[in-house]
Amino acid sequence: MKLIAIPALFALALAAPAVAGPTVTTSIAVSPAGLDLSTAAGAETMANRLDRAAVRACGASDFSLRDYQQAVRRSACYRDAMGQALTALNAPAVNAALRTAPPGDR
Image 1 (tube, rainbow, N blue to C red):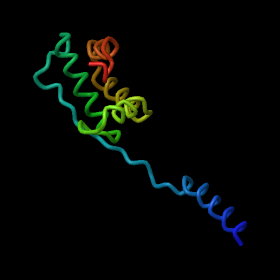
Image 2 (image 1 turned 135 degrees about the horizontal axis):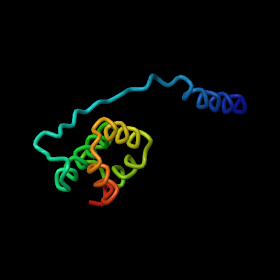
Image 3 (image 1 turned 60 degrees about the horizontal axis):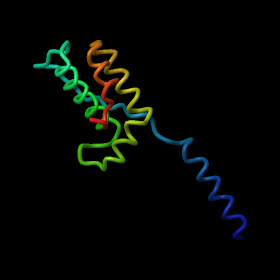
């Protein structure tokens, strides 16, 4: 009897990912209002705003443990969110600010 139950549970565990629900998309508006994105200070402030929004959209918060926030920053969700935001923003100084001081290193 035990030999039958164990393989049955294993099969259910393998089937679980196949029945996962649809992908959920989270959008967070980030405004460049009041910033001059051509300056280093404005670009860094915008980079910080984008970072915080992407971290939140991908499941962490300002109150999450630093290790968890760093794990979120290494995720595909975060990379995709930042990539889309930077493409939409089209501000080379913000890209440069992120390259010189990556999020979490500030």
